[in-house]
Image 1 (cartoon, rainbow over the protein chains, first blue to last red):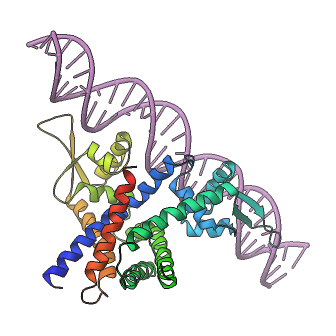
Image 2 (image 1 turned 180 degrees about the vertical axis):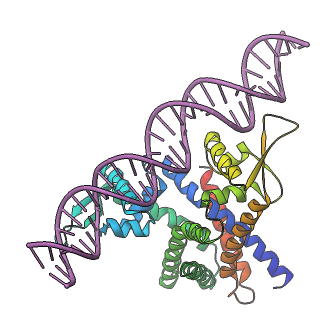
Image 3 (image 1 turned 135 degrees about the horizontal axis):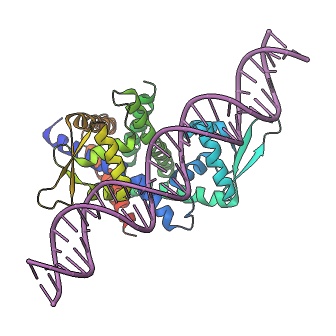
Length: 152
Length: 152
DNA sequence: AAATTTATTTCGAACATCGAAATATTCGAT
DNA sequence: ATCGAATATTTCGATGTTCGAAATAAATTT
């Protein structure tokens, strides 16, 4: 690395640290100011994990949310009570519970999606002709790197 | 946006969502596998907020961590008991408690720093001549965007 | 059809966070 | 200088989240 690249790297690293330290609570804060004051960021991510029109089983959710099944049950209980999700027994295998979004749940899903699109636009919109692929590749590399980390 | 840019945008947005959904628990998981099994990701971020060689007051920390002062007290209690931080009364104003890192705490600080550097390298290392500034600008824009969001 | 496995829930314990009150100290107005 | 208000932190009790173990219910294997 040249001295200049070094500098560029340091600056970017700082920005990245700042971004990662803050996204979570910023989304939480914007949630509190929205009309969905009764859910947490974790609830919102659960809703995002359920997907818009499909359903997920309780165990699928507990895996993607990195929660124990019993903790998942209580998250779902809470969201069901508040009207964001519905439980239905799978007709094929009656042990499994399928979780789907209600209309209200889908509204939250869209809000989460919009939040992410806002971020993606901030990365993207000021790029010049031909620069998009550079950023796309960089972000893809970061994604791959994180995935590699989990295969220890 | 051209159809191709649209595509590029969607792809990047997806990667971003994936990255943000996962960084937290990936760092938590790598922490669990390290020799610091007795602290959480929140503890680690508290340690990062204290800074390497300087000190922070309890209230400064409660602000940057978005915790109430009372919650901050108990986080600090826990970290002090485990030997990551030390409390000292400010000699000028004896109401304030200054929190600093112990040697053990600094080791955690460096681990956190290394984790972030790893991510920054993954973004940076495969870039060609002249592409670094593009990514640097994009990340800077994202950072600014998030900061704007909090001034509602 | 009995034993085993799988999906989920219930329960009790541990821990985190909060808000209100308590404590200690400093600052400001008289 | 002293009293009252303001500030920094801690303590306490209540609430909520997460966990692990045991319970329940349904499917699969033997």
